[in-house]
Every structure is written in structure tokens, then in C-alpha cells.
Image (tube, rainbow, N blue to C red; front, side, top):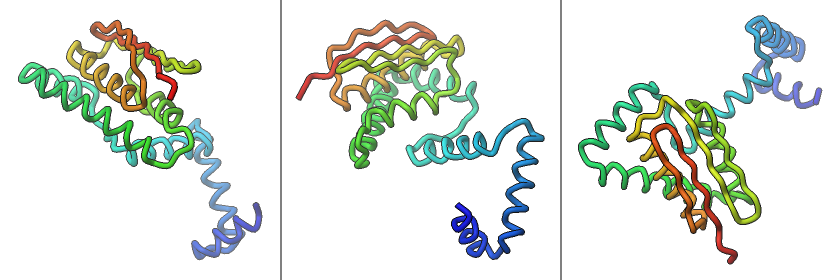
Length: 179
């Protein structure tokens, strides 16, 4: 570990002492802010992963309002866009060369979706169960997001859907056929 730190210091043009001193200063500053360096690194990694997966940050109320406007104007076209996006995202995980693309997709969805009271994605053998509750979701957003999730699951090979969707609540259960 010391050799790695020394190598990084050299790459950055620091002496080893200056590099270690800066790391200690940053650690103290983070603690004074009430966070740890680990949590800052984890949060940066989360934002980087979200960006690489094609997500963008936006104002929550604006996002819901745009979903409502688009859904009112053309339910079919808007729904198709969300379905295509779910399929595209799932395909990007499948084609990434990951050993278990669905597990990474599941982890990322659980990490990237911040605006829910409850979000549970459970997998057991060849079954997946998704439960999302958010009083903030508009009716249009709820149905669009459910379509996004269902199409992603279909792309991962899940079929035989059992759904219960209403404003602010998404419950989806699906089974994957053994290949």
C-alpha cells in the first residue's frame, strides 16, 4: 500500500510526505463535514456508474411534469419510448461482458433510484419481484417507469408477468424460463 501511495505521489508531482499530508487533510475535512472518505468515494463511484449507464440528474418535480405532459400528448409514443429505453439499458448490461449482468443491473437500479419510499428487488432462483412505493410519483410516471422495468426484465429473459400498478406503487413479479 505504501508503494502504491508513493507511486501516486510521484505521478501527481508530490513528495510522499506532501501526498500523505493532503490525504490526512482531506480525511479531516470530510469528517468535519460529517462524512467519511469511504462514503465520498462510494458516492462518486455511484454518480460515475450512473453517468456511464446513460442516466442524468434532473429536478424531480420537472421530471414528473415532463412525463405527465408527454403522456397526455401521446400515451402510446411516450410509453414506447420508455419501453425502448428499458430494453436498451438491459441490452447494454447484457453486452457489457459482465459475469452476471442482471445482478449489476439490479444493484444499479437500487442505487440510482433515489426518489422512492421503498424499493425492493428480490431474486430467487428464476423469479424476480420488484416492489416500489413512492407517493411522489405521478400516475403517468408510475406507468411509464413500470413499462421501463418490465421491458428491461423481458430483455433479461423474464416472462410470465404478474403486475399490480397504481399511482405511486409498482409491483411486478416475473419468471425466467430455464434455457
